[in-house]
Length: 336
Image 1: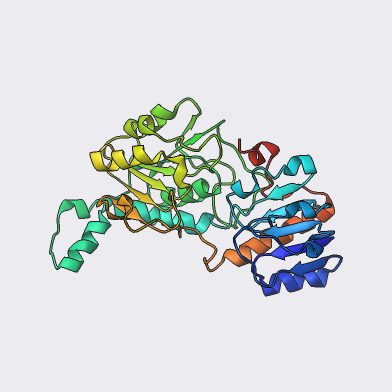
Image 2: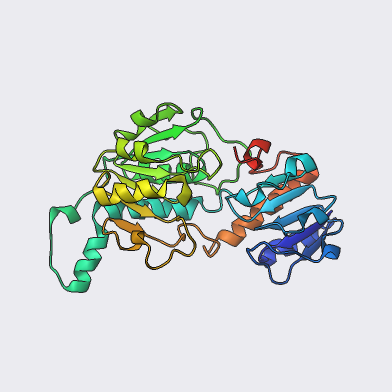
């Protein structure tokens, strides 16, 4: 097969693939994470595309069979008619579960202990030993809306720290198959949660939480799914964490919830505009920790190794006629 690689190269993984032989591998010299055309001659006869975003002239790849994405999100594939063209697609979910899980735990502790105010006190030379800075998260309840890799690894870590874990899913819980998981992470069998809620039980799920973590992908269904009704269903003492995608929450409702005290605060790593302009009100809200989409990024020290591990495993699975890891369904590719 002819393989076009439009992501940064992991030398050891590339060398291993070349040593295996049997394929022609063409690596773009300066891969970028933006949509742009590539030389049509280069696209001719490509069977496999390994990229962040397909080239704008992707239709030039007449015999394309499979796209491996270097991202967990896959909205860049919407409208490409991949199922109709007979093109399979896989994403890199699993690469970021570890670092995002660590971000979730760090933010829960920072929110519970009002770490942002402690830092402001330090900068102002204020000695304040109030009880608000001494709260523990042990014994509190964290709820995960969505229970993919990010939810499962965050839940594993939360359970180790003594939190109760509640989960809201579409259809209940069970083992995961054919999904990339870093050994020793996550909840492959789906046995960690103390309570599991399903679609239609949202208000019951929300009403007892100390922390709500959004861990679902952005789709046509999930966009704007969290609005005033859901935010008001949370206890006023609850904190919201969003390492998923900003537009899952309706922006006006979130701003009102944080300024009017419907909820206690939030940690936001995904946003509505990139980069977020300096005059955006979320920057300065005293009850918000605002991070620039770095909970799990391509600059993570292990990202490239894991990404190429997924690709290498999937290439071997394709050769052997086995199911691919992280394969996206036709419904997912349609935004459902």
